[in-house]
Image (tube, rainbow, N blue to C red; front, top):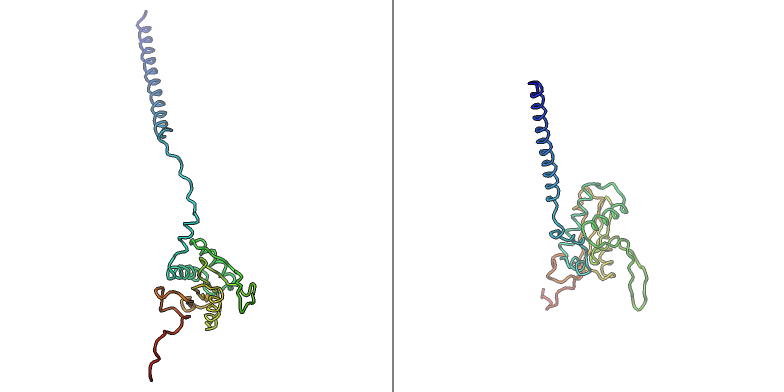
Length: 213
């Protein structure tokens, strides 16, 4: 063969060897990628079964009912403050009542709205005698107001509701006040002395000898 032919064969041999090396490198890259893709997933034997979504049992719901009265009223007041900071004092009572109900439900409390209360007096039964704005956790009555001024009748009326409903605790929340803290009144009905005795407004006078004047 001529020198040119030898050079052509040598050039073709070099190109063939280079192509073979390129093919092997490409195969190695594909194999490495496939290996990483396979090994990045856990094997079936090592996979953990998916844990079921947590659900609230009746016993867990009962635990939320055991909240201390101070914590319960504090949580309700905190929710009311958040609402008042957002909307101030320009809405109707029904709107504040609706927003407060949904806020407390999101916070994890059980809320009944406009629940009818019945009572008995001297053998007569009075069905659906009145309706409460909100009852929280079956223990706390909330009366929602949107008035520019406070009135002592609000707390008096709430205390009557507590007595007839046989519930221990109540809150008057007057969202119409420029400062909500000025429109908050807590009313307590027959709570044990160890639970906020300084706030008990419906209790009998202490039994003892009458002091001499």
